[in-house]
Image (tube, rainbow, N blue to C red; front, side):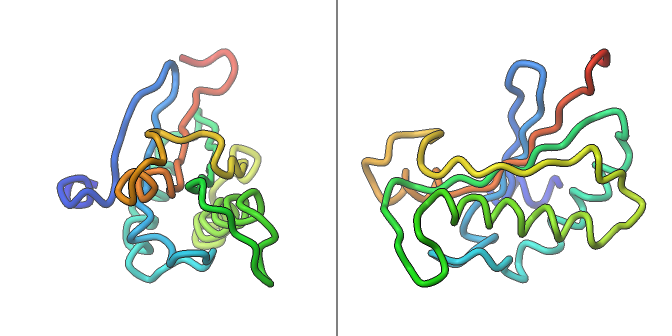
Length: 142
């Protein structure tokens, strides 16, 4: 993922006992949508290949939004949008490689309630619109 990290499309961070792979919103989804953009698919393929090498870890895919309310025909609120985005990533990862143990994976939507920065500017709201892939040791593993 070196190239994606250099471009700022992917960010890695370690938090307590987990690695977080942060996928930038500008390559993953159009505003107010939960359909993966084609630009993110090569990165997700690389991530999937990496995850397959570490079967001793659980994976949680988390969707996050900014604090701008949404209410459309498709999404009643940010909870639904964030969850649908997490599920879009989960489905792509699992449907592209049937060998992955699906029991290791989960998805969650956090709406605007887990920002990484304050939502006080357009640039900060863009950082908060994201999908994080948490890589967590299974119980009893370190």
